[in-house]
Length: 452
Image (tube, rainbow, N blue to C red; front, side):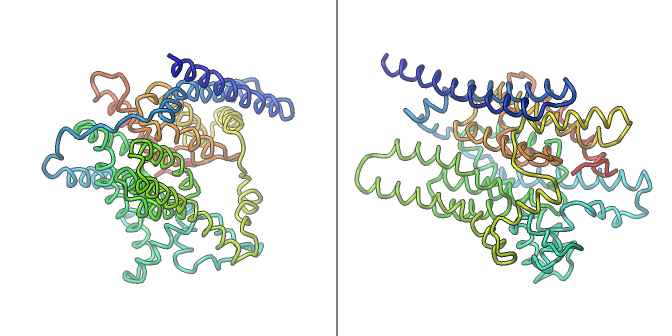
């Protein structure tokens, strides 16, 4: 009884703190930089309220997990025959269909004259910079003498560069550095999900993951696929108590994308669960301390990236200056991003600009649908995954000039878990909803309707 009272008071206290902090930030922004349109304010307020609702709804599960972690479920069934091969085949089919659709659209609309020419879709995207880094490092200078490529993390171009040592084709190596990690992530994600779900549920989650609106980026020379592999591998290794390997792989995730550093959130929950469930012998305590030290390897990926900035410019945080001066980006509140995007979306719609369909509407739709999805199903997720979401969302959607929201959220696989656990009896309905959305986004990507 006393424990329940303490739990209730903790929930109330932290809910009030979250509501107060978020309200203070919102009203400070609105009073100093009020939006010009009422719709922009409404959009920002709705984003903040949904985020707060997600926090309040998931908070009891986090507190309960901290106070008394649940026992992991024991697997009641073995993996069926060829399970890994099926997962790999599914991911390979995703890559093939996305590539075929994008290239087919380019050929039908006569943007390109032959199939191989369609692979130039990546021109103008971040892939150009990644491939340049793979070839010549960060030595490239812009017309203003700035090393702008420093804003791109080195994990993916490093893999591409290693492949170029064997295959003397820069573009081919760029695609291989995306395809190979994505194919490998299929079996790895399967094993991770099977720790909590049956085979059928796991396969449905993998299908939904492949149907993410921006899943087209899995197939192109970008860092998404490598990040998925590193994030899933890190969590699987931690779940199976191989913490040193988990720390190394997590470090690679942070070396690939800045959001990789946020893996510390689910890792901390997993470490705490294992620590509380282990016996209290001195040997177990020492092992838990070693595991915690291994977990701290993850942010070393960010430290290495900062060191690269320091080597080239003398300033470990130069990438922040470049982001702000050339891409107008700095870390801000996610609800400000919602307001800005609503304002640009309205202007693009009134002017008949294609960017409304390819850029602003998808960013807004994915942001709000992610919040709604976690509000509906977040309690059914593992506490470490659900606690990971608010950090991931706040940082990824906190970019002041956000262009790639769907791409950032596509690699956050707990959203696919949340989708699968929706109270929908006929799961095929989820595929019917997701498939045309994904296809439409891929078509807009192929036609270069400001899809980034």
